[in-house]
Image (cartoon, rainbow, N blue to C red; front, top):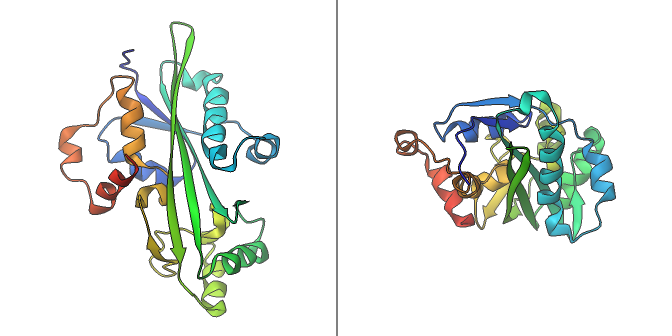
Length: 219
């Protein structure tokens, strides 16, 4: 299968936008019209497969939109798993506090599912993968939690934290891909794009950061 279609990132996340820009490929951005909470509640498979399943659903919803025409669609979803429970985005500040207290000083898993899809000659072509990274949170104080919630940063993130936040610095250790925890494992995305004969710009890849190189842990 060959595709010369430009990329379309179906995500409102500025973090994913920043990561995909390192490929050196032109792309546009939009949001898939998906009710994530409703879809998550309808899921009946193994918990580790939820992220990729949601990413695939986002892809199918996006492919029905006019702005997806003649585009290679990239969708992703990140889940935070603690004791086989999904810790989603917090409902409010108090819920964010509960999630951060539950995670404090403990290992958990971050799973990001990535799907690349396109409508080619009237046929849906969809390729997906997922990446899992074990993460150990540091023993932050309740005062630190209060200050972090006041910043507003945790309110739009699964598990109520962003690993890249330099002030809160929530994690003590990760065992695998950093970019997977941020929300888009670049290595998995590159492999999926290759199935559509789309490859990163080599000059852009030459200037990749140590963080993006750590994504090789997924491959």
